[in-house]
View 1 (cartoon, rainbow, N blue to C red):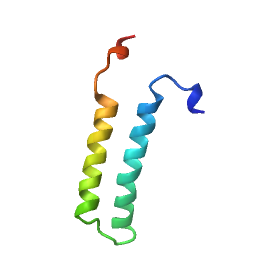
View 2 (view 1 turned 45 degrees about the horizontal axis):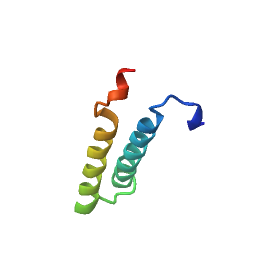
View 3 (view 1 turned 30 degrees about the vertical axis):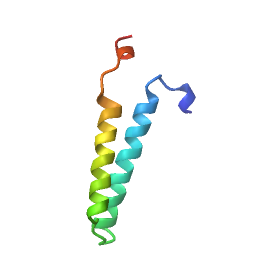
Length: 64
């Protein structure tokens, strides 16, 4: 399916992956009562920063 999507599908898919990781940690915290440790929080922050860069960084081909 990804081959039939628009050319920026990779950005959407990367964003989905990052959100999935964060939601997984929240799920474990809320439903399984396993709080994230410091490394989980730092990793989630790094992932969300990476997702923001991948999805929102302006590119030359965005204007085409």
